[in-house]
Image (cartoon, rainbow, N blue to C red; front, top):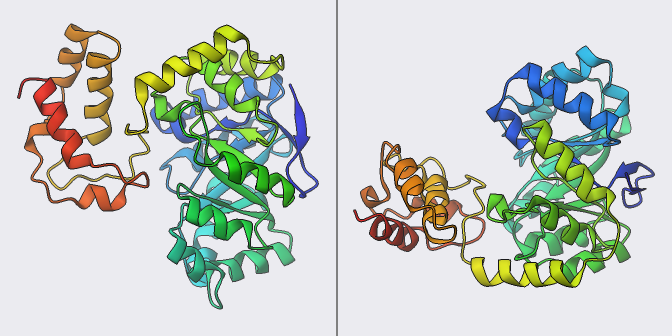
Length: 337
């Protein structure tokens, strides 16, 4: 496993981290099994969040039961804007994670306007700086989906790490990554598989880590098989081959830029449409030629894409500004609604 400095924090981090979103899909014993295997493979960085339902809690239990708490750098995050909100969320994280300190606490995907409120007097940054002063929070970071928020974070001296999407098809952060390194801030790459849109995890991780400005990449993992494949990809530090570069181009041609990353920020839908699943099954239908299976899976959805009332609420939440209403119409047409 490769290890690098986490920006200017003084922490040494494995370039492959453990993404804790999929923990929500499994149970606590399997979470422990995964984290024990991750430790044996040399991974020492865990990403989770208050918003990931049981993720913090199950990770905390797993680390306590296995005695591995001090072997990992825990990075979590919340959507607090004010100092009061942050104090409450931080205490909740400490309880869930069963720890008395957190190595990296991050502001979770604030808009540029909310970031300004966070760093203003009375904002959430005040609470984290107070926690830092007494050793509860070691370092402070931000996660973002918008370049405008990334820019603001780069200019803020209190921000030590920035998490942003970076993968084969999402290159909007490429220039910002280089500036991040120059500023001494760690760059944490999220969505290396573009929310599952990129099929080859090995190719996705190899591509992401080929950028020297990427400090750590955090693919989500819910199975030991995924963990093993990700570790093998991260440990292969050889340059990308001509075949791999050609495969990257094929991925770009296939996906373009207007696709769902399955972040689920669009939820809940006003009428109950499972929006990411609609796009997932459409991908099986159109990109992978799995017509029968795609229709079978799509038919399990209790509310189909054609039920969209075009209220537009989902589009106000989408960090990628996708035209979701228009895209749902295409899903409905593709599945013959």
